[in-house]
Image (cartoon, rainbow, N blue to C red; front, top):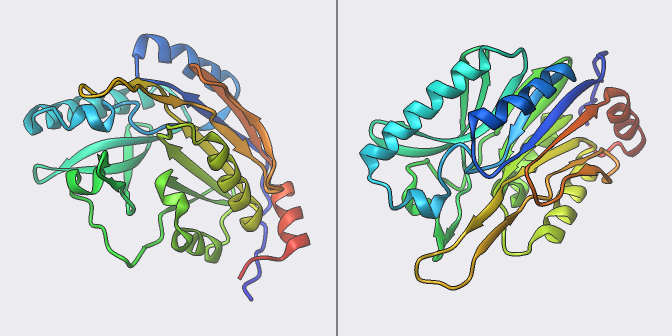
Length: 269
């Protein structure tokens, strides 16, 4: 069994910015609040800085590539104003092919994690659209250390896969950021899923979900992205959550609570 030695560190703040889309004129207000509250990370949901998947499928590839490049430039420029890191799902192009990626951006620099588990439904087929390398052999997701804690960032759909969590458990992860784009009245299922994952791994889970609506051209039914972003403690309880509107949530990561639950339950490999 691998011993998890908790490194000495101080608590730090994280933020969930629950949005429909990125509007710089509005976003600056929230970012100033994050700066004032000494936030270390700001997490956004999926398809916030880019059009929603069903919409971007109708955009010519050359135009989409230009949009993604312009978006990245704006994000990098914004990050230079603040000391915290952004965790932002975005579309990027490699050799003229689109990839679904999660970017960690700080001080004008960026690192990427490419999604390993894409939706492949008839009504929502990301696997067909994106060029991500999808295999049965799941690799460790984005893992990084901050303030003595091991942190990870994944996409919402990836949180369904045990193979992802086995990688995280073996890494003795402390904090997991989950960026999602959930809809279709699935909020209760998502709550139970991530509460269970947090408890079994004795880690914090920070989940940011998109808000807004999408109405297909050939349908009378509107898809609602309901928000309900939340902050789960290592006990498996939701410590705080948002509603279904544009909001900002700031939570505190306490390493002593992580240590307490890991020591008591001893569920690590």
